[in-house]
Length: 196
Image 1 (cartoon, rainbow, N blue to C red):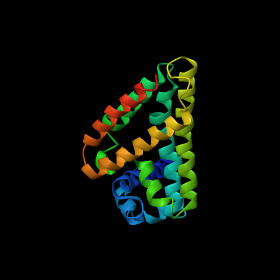
Image 2 (cartoon, rainbow, N blue to C red):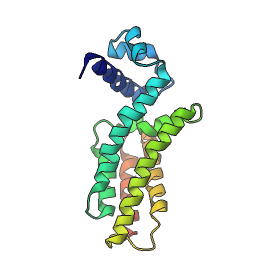
Image 3 (cartoon, one colour):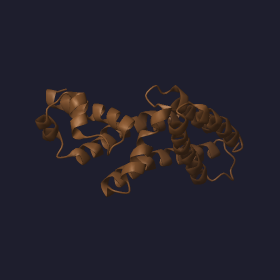
Image 4 (spheres, rainbow, N blue to C red):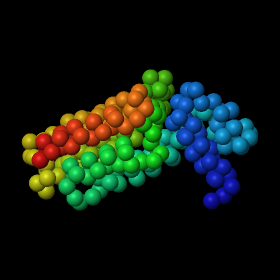
């Protein structure tokens, strides 16, 4: 990787970490510069402004993370209900980066930026659609292979799972621990079992 590419990636990674903890609007370019130890000139060489950098974070940091943590686990040929539960358990309790007190990075950006910036809203909507489509597909496959009842509506189940995940991430921000996560996972297991 060339030095310029490495610098750009460092800016994106460090900015993402700051934004995850502090929020997008309260993280300044100066905060990012202090963390990355790059010059203002280097920042503006790579990004016209903070919003261009924010969109790059969605497309170059969050999207690959979505592919790895939210979509790849659903590619398994095993029982999709068990796969979904295992993925959620890992995302809530087993992922060392995702802290209860900071919530879900994509959800945080959606709540903070979608009302104010249509480009953020569009990029985040595309990101969310990837997960939604993967969940619907794995549930459809589950119906075909007898793991999921034929009368189950995969789109409705997907909305329930996604909204539950984002909701419990917000509850985790409030209680700062994993008590909400444990309660959610217990009920999620009951819900998924009801789809058999």
